[in-house]
Length: 256
Image (cartoon, rainbow, N blue to C red; front, side):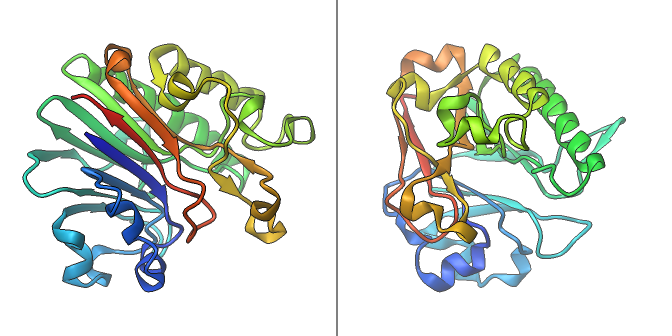
């Protein structure tokens, strides 16, 4: 099974630029999208059923044109929506960041983790999101294997960004973020590192500074799987040749 993830930075722009089709032409079975920045009612029927795929959207409830995630599934693959947001008694996400689907052999979570840069309050919200997301993934894993992907808006280690010294302690590289992410690495498989070792590639570049031209980037988009799936991971790629967003797509192939 091939799964693809891409922060498209606005799905309507992706359709208009005709760039979104590239990930479907990879032969993907599942396509996870972050930062859709729209309601599904704002899309045409052929966009909701792109290439014949079915789709599920979770959009921000508190702010239109912001955040949002979606998953497209190839025809003939059975799935159901488990729940479409990450809400608990002490934590409420109304920013459209989490989408959970159940397939025959695994749970799939598409996520767009908070950036945390708007304010100190939103940074704390980011750390709380990490905490509750991990709880959710571990809870689901008691029933079936888990695969989750998306833009996590932080780096696991210094190898995951071009200029670690200049960015040490800054947003995306803070000690608190790294400690939180270490718990994910302890409990799940970072598929790209599992397949590619210390190979250096990035998934996001600051467009304001034209850093993609110089490849001064960050690896902040990930696929994680349950450790029980480790030997079934056939491939994990960063498709940095595909343009159309400040992020590039990533993919995995899993025998499942």
